[in-house]
Amino acid sequence: MRCGTSGASTRSRRGSERGAAGRPRLPAASPGTTESFARGWGEIRHGSLLEGYPEYVGCEARAVELRMFQIGVIPGLLQTPAYARAMEEGNVRRGTLTPEQADERVAVLMDRQAALVRPRPPTMLVVMDESCVRRPIGGAEVMDEQLRHLVKFAQLPNSMLQVAPYDIGERRPFNLPINLLTMSDRSMIAYAESQAQGHLDREATFVLSVLSAYHQLQAESLSQAESVAMIEQLRKGAP
Image: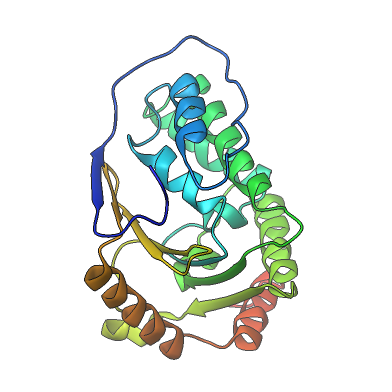
């Protein structure tokens, strides 16, 4: 399926398939299609990922602009390996994932990050709820490394990092994480995900309404300079 196709949406629930141990790396993408990603993810999936998610990631790897909003945890594309591992180790301790599934999810995340390292990287606009930077994950050392990584991300020429503070209250337009992709043909794709369901949507009316809400979110959030200042204060232990 081509990323730029309009007027289509995909809803998917978590799969129950299990595979053999071991995980091949995510294959390189073919220009304009997501089939190679879907095949590769089909090989490595142990049921720890949402069905249909490979299609989104295939498009993400070719997007020219990414807009992200996250609640509760650092967005995956900005997570350090140690932070990502701490998150998945928590799932293993709770019994919601096997160690193999946890390893797979971390490897998939690292593949997603690597796919965005290219000669002309995409513009990345990220808004995080304040809970993302205040929730301690993996202990003080892991969290400090993660916060330092966010500050470095904000310094990149192709990035924008904002924190949506608690005090915007009901003015925050989203109650779930959401991603918006802009492709090279200027078409847009929206992807939202809950605990058990993913929704990929290209329908113009829906995508434009999400884009409008994202612009409202950016206007209500702290500026990048204010957001970095908050992160630096958290690193110093200030409330």
